[in-house]
Image (cartoon, rainbow, N blue to C red; front, side):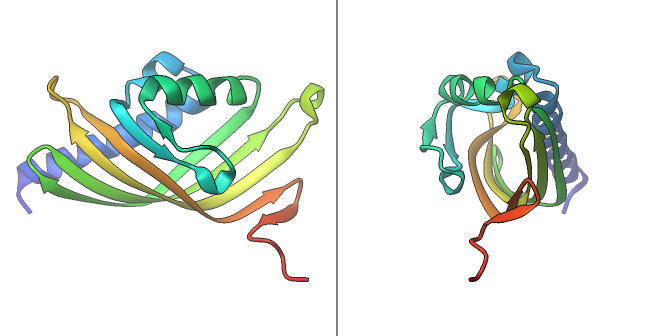
Length: 151
């Protein structure tokens, strides 16, 4: 791997860090910019529909999380450049969400992996082109909800 390739991989790692931070801080304008305009989002395992486009993803997610305290962590990144302007990555993830008492006061803890593809857009910035979330476990209020606990 060349030093130049390492620089590009680090740019992608910084991009993903910005994704987590801006989502947790509810900085939706900055958060939206981590995605390509034509991003494809698959969080269907969580019950969401497939989403196409960053504006549609913001319209879907920002109202759901606006009043929720969230902490998202990405770990152990595996980033591979697949072309001059393309890459893919896998991130181990953990998220914790706390709803206000006025909205039920629930707590969610989840873990799994993000499978992603990236593209360097014409402005020279790396962005997320495709995001697929595959969860290994979810607990709500301390009870395992995914995968379903054995009977």
